[in-house]
Amino acid sequence: MFKIDNIEFEKPLLLAPMEDVTGPAFRKLCKEFGADIVYTEFINSDGLVRSNKKTEKKMRISDEERPVGIQIYGADLEAMKNSAVIVETENPDIIDINAGCWVKKVARRGAGAGLLKDPPYMEKMVKEIVNSVDRPVTVKTRIGWDSDSILIEDVARRIEDAGARALTIHCRTRADAHSGEPDWSWITKAKKHISIPVVLNGGVMEAEDIKRAFDETGADGVMIARGAIGNPWIFSRGKTLMQNGQLPPPPTIRERIETALRHLKYETLFKDEEKYAVIPFRKYYSGYLKGIHNSSKLKPELMKHTEYAPIEELLMKFLEELENGNNVDESEINR
Image: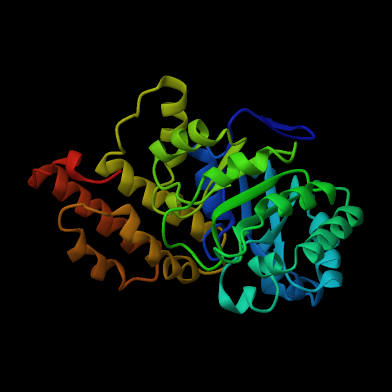
C-alpha cells in the first residue's frame, strides 16, 4: 500500500521526473492514460534561490494533475532547504529530493546520485528539508554509487529516520547509468528495514514489466520513466493486465498517431510560440511511429515544420494512406 497523508493507492503507477520530458503537457497526457502520481522535471535548487525564471517555470503545476510532486536537486544544504520552501508555495502534494541523477555534471559535484557518496550528509539534508516544510518529503535514489558501494539498505534506514515519507529506488548504481539489467531484488531487501512505502524504478519498459515488478518484489508502487516516452498507454495497459490478468491489445496505428497529435497539441498549449513546442517534440516521433510501415520516410518531412497544422496534416494523410492503401500487419509492431 502506498500511503502519504491523504494520498492512498493500492499498487500505484508513478510517472518519473525526467529532464525535458515531464513538463505539464506530458504529465497531462500520462494522467489521462492512468498515471496515479506524476512529477515535474527535476529542478535545480541553485536556480530557484537565484530566482531564475526558466527554473521557476518548471515548478508550475495545476490541480488537474494531482497528486503531483515537485522534485528538486542540489548539493548545497542551504540552497536545497530554501528551494524546498519556495517549492512549497506552489502547494505540491509531494516534495521529492533527487538523490539518483547519474549525469556527470550533476553527480560529480555532489548532487543527485553524488549524495550516495556521503550517506550521513544525505540524511542530514533530508532531515533539514523535512523540518523546513509542511508538505510530505520523499526521496528518489539508486542502490549505490557503483557495484563496490551498494549501500541502499543503510541509506533506506537513514532516509526513514530523517523523516522522509516514501522512498523510490532506481535499481541500478550510478555507474550503471541506464545500462544493464536493474537488480530488483534490492526492493525486497530495502523493505525489510523500513516501514515507509518503497517504489520500484528502473527497467519498466512495457506493461508486462509492471506486473512482474509488483509480483517479484512486493513494491508499494512502480515508477515509470523512459518506458512512458512515446508509449503513454503503458499505464492503462499495465493496470488492465494487473486487474484482469490479461494484456490488452497494443494501440492501433490510428491510436498511436492520434495520441502523438494530442501530445503535441498539449505541448503547444503550454508554450508561448508553437515553434517552441513543435521543435522539441521531434524527439518523440521515433517512439510514436516505431515500426510503422514507411514512417522512416515521413520523419524527415515532419522535421521541416515549426507549426502544429502542417504536422497534423502530414500525419493524418500518412494514416489515411496506411489505412486505405497498404496492408500493415499491426501484430508485427512493438507495443
